[in-house]
Image 1: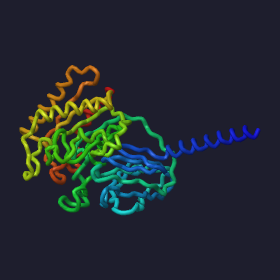
Image 2: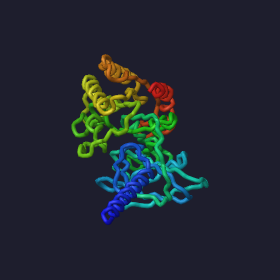
Image 3: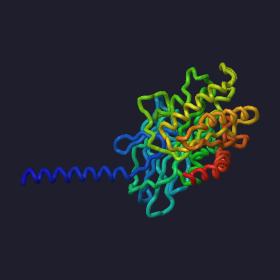
Image 4: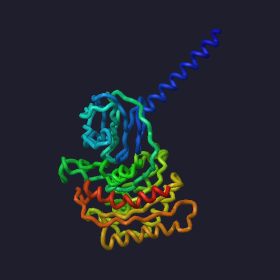
Length: 363
């Protein structure tokens, strides 16, 4: 009887602990490239990566910290009960409390914290919340991954509070209002941004792949940098992978550093190999290649011709879905540093909407 009692007690204790773990795991939803830590803490890594939770009552503080090799601030964007309520500055230094203003008296609230800045700005640590948490369930949706550069990150798009040319280079970042998240919200799809400002397919904005990593170097790494010790899991299996890379490969750089003529052969070769990498992790996805609304004239002609040659290289590929091409209409961007502002991103999303909707409906 003594041994039987111990066995039953141990079994009940194990069951209770399992139940507690299961309950805790239903309090938060994570999205994007994030690193989960103990006690429900997490690091938001990539642009628009997020943590979401439901809670009761009208009081909610969140505890955040900016993480990097040196101290500096970051930004997060907040969505409360499905409505965007603004971007807040995550101050440098120790973890700080940020109160959430709640005006509507609802039975239950939902808060989603999106990283507004990008992976190269370091992580944003979500440490805890004072909110009275309730259960949250993941809703099954179609999925889109957006691979790209600064445009995809939402760099320079939010100029309302800090004018262009002032503050830090990332002070106008707001990934929440980049074209990818906008179109995903419109189509009610889950999304992932794998994007880095200045990056290219075979060279970067101002580097001939000498000092800096290109997208094929960092894509498989969780932090979108050279650190291979933390590989990305690729648990997010997208229905569509949208690739918008080439603006920086085609750029003239800053005019001071050595810049070689655009190498079409290298660009196409790297692009083909990169698509093979994407397929190795997401074999059932549909890939869409995008040109850039920031590239026009002769450069755009070269750009589109290269993308067509990349697609032609997979003409006999029967294992994967046919690669699609989408061509943006040129625009005169109104954000910082010749980047789209929020209104421009909305126009980009509108151009893509029907095209992506048709593809998602076919999946």
